[in-house]
Length: 420
View 1 (cartoon, rainbow, N blue to C red):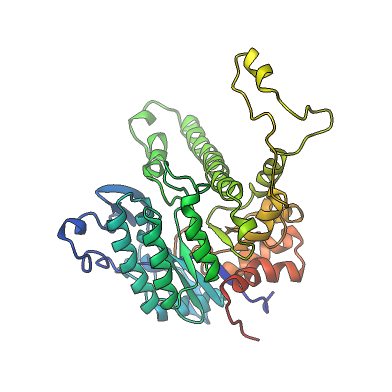
View 2: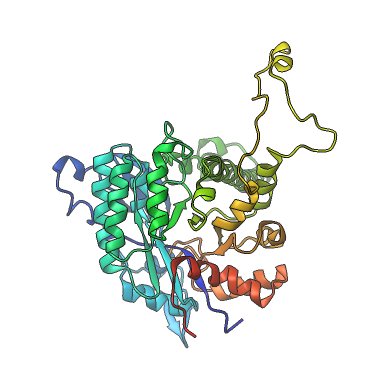
């Protein structure tokens, strides 16, 4: 385990707080730009275009620098107070990679992710270009691989920006996980985008929660927050409320992942993107992967005819019953099954997902890639090696499987030069 080379597929850039406000050319855009407001109790309030998108605990590393003892990070006492670091630096990231025992990382935006939810093409691209210039200059190295933000409101502009960021040396792009509501990814209008990414051997990343409003993150307050609805409840009832909140919250999150990520994957497969561009790879970030085996089964089952099943549902027969008719002769026309394209060209990241590892014989090894979500509070930094050891032992992973899942696959996708 000590010799295992780790590469995280899920890390985030903490952009300078004035990155956009100091560089946007139009005054009317400044107030709409991504920004973070720090609140008491270690909360951050992320806003974009006049809306709140996230209210959560702030970053572990930056709220509590702790101390390094014999090369190991130790948290400071709970009552200690530190001045938050407003943004990160490349030297700081490399130092934290070393503490965590991670060789390299791919970097995704933080506040910048909100840009992908805008339907204002000019504004979104102006913000994206500012971010892309910043990460290319300040975040890229042989151990850190930032992804460029590519809005998809104007595909011609998207392709131009892809050509530009390739010249900056970037190897991955970030597009919204959820396509605009009126323009799903199976439409032909995206063909130039896929072609440009494939021609330049760019990894196409989609981070969970991107491309949509995220006020839903705030709905978990209610009963658990100690609000008025908690009054009059017994201690046992309050404990049940907390248990319900955690249980239903996790169920809701996983249902959301299966529908949102599964829908996007279905759009890409239906469009034949993987068939036309067999060397184009998609990375779905911070989604977990426990749902992957079920999705693959469901994708194939859409076109499989089971034993005893009727091969065709006739439109007239359905119509007689007052139902909506299915296409009478719909067939899967691509040479590989949907699950085979997924296993070959799509990759999902997880932090700690025992079920996904248990299902690796169904999903395949290449579809599973690990990330520590640095520097977010819920991530595994600075004890990623301990977490990986636990997962590997529990799942019975071979040394070869560990090497691929926890670093080898993502390193190959980004063309990283690993030591040795």
